[in-house]
Length: 314
Length: 314
Image (tube, rainbow over all chains, first blue to last red; front, side, top):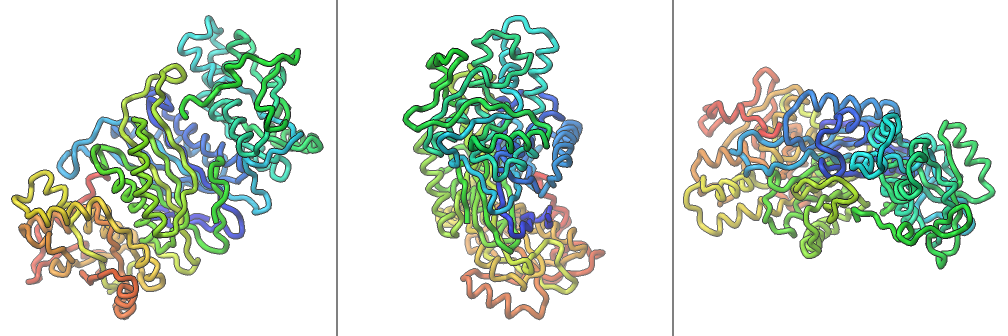
């Protein structure tokens, strides 16, 4: 499908299908820590893009990698590529060129470089049948609200590192870090939900923040039942307030958040079972005027500051 | 043609045509100076990508912009977008989403940011008829070697700034800077050369470096006639050695370097005339064993160091 790699442009033949395209820019010190394992970084840099394709219901086809390396380190680069290619191969997604910049060793040809951070920009391309296009604007009144996997673990890994959670058993801390460093893009589930989910987004900025994007684009409101929000055993071991903070407002989960009409429940569950991904029904779509509310098991609304959460990087 | 902008992915319908895709990553202090005019920066950031599409003979359709802004500066961003959109509109190329990161103002949610440079990553998409695919590997023995516009001015702007050229009249210095800051991607010429040019590349790293890419991929050699290399009146006013350095080894020209069979000369000239871009025949393709040579008007080979030029950023 992909020719011309190494030319000015890669050439893709997408036949009669729609092309889905997404770009993510990751900066050292902002999106990942300077000392992070390069294998997991390679995995995650591609995973966050495949997660966007999953939300669109697209089958990954190709990606372009642009990399700015402040240090020439072959060992680091090989490890990074190993993590990236393992995930790419698992999804049949080929590298279609890109752009690599090293800081010039001599200042002779260009002006002296700033000592900038390692920078990774990946553009991923996938395709889907024209009639399967799924957008954030598709949520309808009465739709169920669903999420895959569990939420909050990636944020808990950061909270753990910052010593915000109190004492955490080692196996729980490891579970948190695994979710932060090795997110699994829900590509197969995203494809299986073609024609079933009415809207979808991947949870990169936090459940409420990302749900807010669907609500705004679809011009609807939502009620989230806190008890239904799926949490790992590790997350359930911390305080309720921290659970809510991590699962409702924490980012980096890369699970799929999606809506589907209430009469499609059996189909949603079949798609989840067929792709081996757990899904949980966490609420429903209501009228726009009702906004976004989160209720506890007694039907009492949670404190305002979770509702008002806004993506910190916006 | 483009839907879903603002979703996780933009969706493109490219029908029965081939899709061309290219990504360029630009870093403050490495690819542009910190104080550069944001309008020209917006223009150039997109221009370098459209130039890649031009080399492939693709018609620009859409682009994605990923931007990391170390400072929140609305005025700067508006000026940057003005420069970018003016060029995009001129070529009918639409913004199809992207990713903008600001340095978080509070260190509360993530680890403290490094003070990184302004970073711009643009992915541009174009399309072309399947039978018009043109690659760097297409140059054939006996082909003419052509280049559009003039070469060396952008590099002369840097040389001027670094005081390497000696005294330069103000109007010449301005001509150099105009070429550096406002490169004109040869999109229409690239399209007009479909089916005529056998191979093409845009001159971003310097004539000899970029020609080397064609020779390597096509497994051929080349002879370049120095006298035929097109130079502006401004460049012709500096020393011959500086002219050679700038025009043969200097980057950032964004002209098209292409090959075409000798019996297609009239068609090349007609394509150039139809698109209002000057082209010059600067040499020819020879056997691989002859390597890459540059000869002066007496047929004497130029000094070795121009032949051995290698892209500093490789």
